[in-house]
Image (cartoon, rainbow, N blue to C red; front, side, top):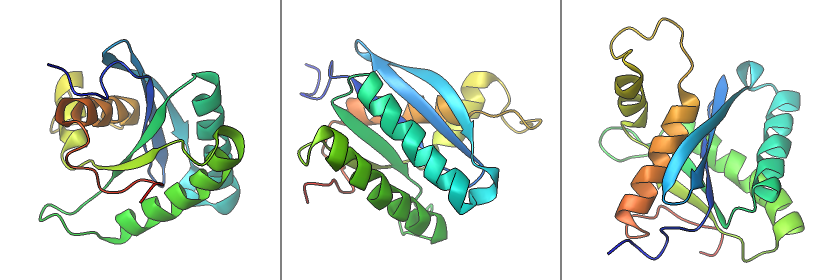
Length: 158
C-alpha cells in the first residue's frame, strides 16, 4: 500500500550554492524539471532562486515542497545544512504569504542523492561538469514518497 503522501503533487528542491535542482511529481512518479544557476550564492541570485521556487510551487499546484537537507554521512548537520535551513526559512515567508500557513515545506535527508543521480545519468565517478541537480531533486522526492513521513527532518508545522 502506498504511503498517504503518494499521489499528491509535490515539488522537490535540491538547493545548492551553485545550482538548485527542481523536480515535480507527476502521478506517483517524480520527474526532473530544471536546474537553476545560483552564481555562487550571491544575495541577489539567492533571492531570485526563492522567487522561482515559489512560482513553481504556485504554478504547479503542488501540495507540498520537499527540500533536500544535506546531512553529513554520520547524520549530523554541517555548514551546508545551515545554509539550506536559512534558504527554507526565507522560502517559507513567500510560501505562507502566497499559499497559506498550512502549506508544508518539508526538510528531507538528501544523503547519497547526488550519487544516485550520477548513477542514473551514467556519470558516476566522472561527472564532467554535468549538472544533475534536477535528477537529485527527483531522487529526494522518490525517497520522500517511498519512506512516507516517518523520517521527516522538520516542517513549517513543527
